[in-house]
Length: 173
Image (cartoon, rainbow, N blue to C red; front, side, top):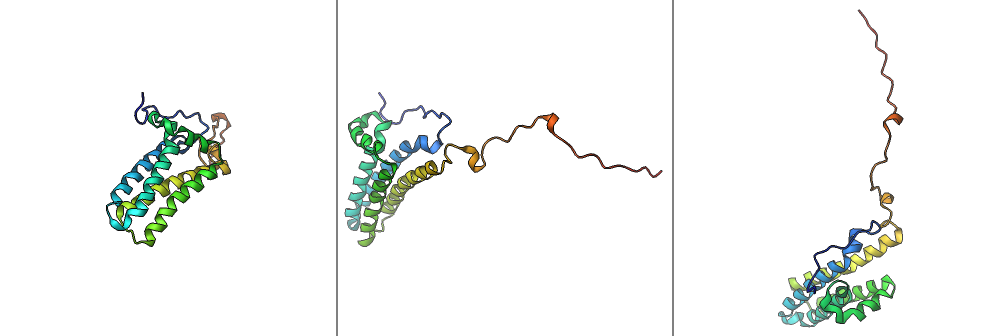
């Protein structure tokens, strides 16, 4: 039984980028760090409401991303399956709302705790990961390495190479 992240990495079949393969794991860890930062920020009295909102956001992020690879989060699998059936933009809209709402409320009540700001950056990173994944999927760059200049150089056989003729030399003796 797996208690935390399995040691085996996702298998790359050549059709996906590393971010597509690791996005759920990265977002789950960022959600956990968001919860820790929100827990620290709750000790500042002016940060209690936005920190509680960040805690709720982290639980939602973990329940969406975690069940795909962490077995003890199997109870949250219906939430994860709900978002798998929806458009990818649905997940981005939910994450953007979970990012901006506590941040706007926190700034309006002057919550300038370092833990709160770092929590906001964690939540923003989760949102940006999925925006980037949608962007690369829509442009086709994720599946076509040669579209952005990567890939191996073309193979040229030695017989096909032509060299410039040497310049004629004059003997002046």
